[in-house]
Length: 233
Image (cartoon, rainbow, N blue to C red; front, side, top):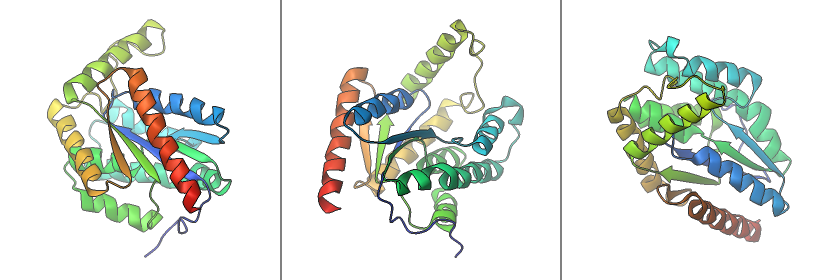
């Protein structure tokens, strides 16, 4: 097996946020970063697809509605191309420095969106992850769970808000936001299946409540995880 990263002997902590588009995970990730920095931790905030100059170019390609004809396997390959560069340039160096890496999406997104949503299946996604990254996994994954209808509506409101400040045309949806509710239903069910399969790593957080309550819950989960990790270090 060819593995492009070494075994996870890092000193830092790798925390990922997952969930449907519009679930509020990006906002919660940024709020958590502020808390952790105030607690004295060195924090790297990044995202997928993207996180590097190469990755951002791939991200733009993946989200562009002009690439609507992209095959599911081509989409998956592009996701992992971005991820491999991201791992090399950002994630591994930050972990080696002892930093906390907060990443907006990782391989769980590929399993949920391409494996579930695109119906590729989980095993090809997991096999590709093992090929490239071996056994490396996040130390903790926060899965922001919400009903499909709520996430779709939140994403719609977000697009309108962006239109009001000129950063995005109103109703200008990216390629994934144009997918059907059935697609997002498969994505959500795959996410929940991942959480059931890996309960020690993935913590499901109800994203339907008030944002501040959700924030407090996430801070509690992460602080407990970091405290536990410090005891076993």
